[in-house]
Image 1 (cartoon, rainbow, N blue to C red):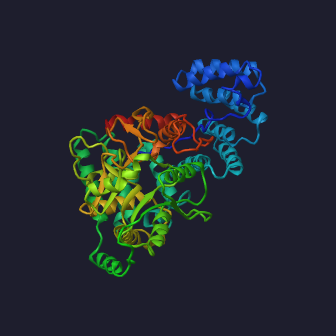
Image 2: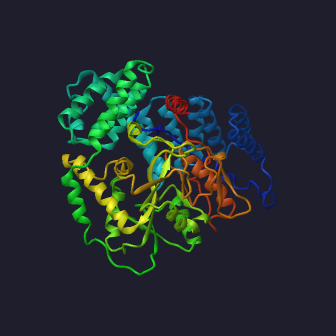
Image 3: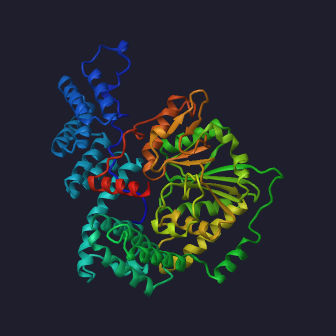
Length: 549
């Protein structure tokens, strides 16, 4: 409804865990263990999605060596896939008893509790996992998603009564009590309980009428209308009316006033510093903590002879809007003609073909080139404002996790986006950081298509949302090069946005095995196992894909 992202509870890293099983592949160094061959067979079956065979192999491994925690964890993970949650819980507890300080066992146990709707228990074990490994963002994501499910139940009660007893919907609607988490809660409340759609549309229309400048309500209204048009209204006159209403809601919301444009334009003057005649390429990312994915990003830059300027390390994370604030501050002292390449910190890797990125950028003949993706996130309702795709176009919608342009042009773009946020969001008291930055970059793109180009063919930036690992091949004869079967390109960078994080980890693993970046490694945070969706969310994701096919 709000976007193509379905929540997931990740069964993290069991395929990458070693621990007591580290002898695999090194039988000459120690006596052979009877469970190793069984476990290898189980992992092969697991990866081919033959979970029944995998469970049988892992059960045999547990019987052979019951003191190995990983054997129990592999079995638990497979039982989860089979929907045998009671036995999965028992197996996870067996693994935890043997290795109590392994945070991923705890997180995976939390996933079992979520399936059983034991949300309090899930939050408890997720919190313990985060305490053990606070740098792993997947663990925090699992906690946040479960917390949201609790809130969904409260929101549904409020929609039934509309008396403010369970939720401050009025404060959410006028921006006084807006949060990005509440917005996601609205989405999931509708996706899981579509019977509330009419009530939500009525509430949103009233909110837009009362406070038309607060743009997010128009976005959520358009998203909900598009969502509803694909339900019972599909094929009826109501479908066209809902799409028309969605377009009207977005069109009324997206434009900047003359006064705002004038104010932004005045701010452009005198902001540039003079630099050398030849511009420098600057790589920039925003991250508040070190993680293995960031380390590999920096290693890939080093292999190309570059460094990544990481902004925000050691500081408190305030939200996605922080990226705009950090980069705006960084650019104050950057020469106008320096070329700035922005990269998301935790799900992007540069490839050896990035040596050609300047030439590829200049081939677009636009001041700024931004990444593109398959999903219109976070606002499916924004689809109605995009130009009609060209024949053969591969990616269709803005992705703000990668973009490139000269410093003065990036600075101007960020100034306009910041003004848009000030005029249509934070004037209510809502945080300029606790928002989805991609929404505001998309608004900027819709207004400025003459100066911002999308990399719709993945020439520089190849996004991975809704992309299968098999669609990205590592080129064996060229180190650090991948070939996309979607675009038939060899991009400069891959970006594991949305549900593409699993494909990103898979491709990263294969690149590391092929020595890119040189001397790097894959640790347990990067699992090739697919994220584990709840059954409801998996159905939602399948329906979305079938509708977009």
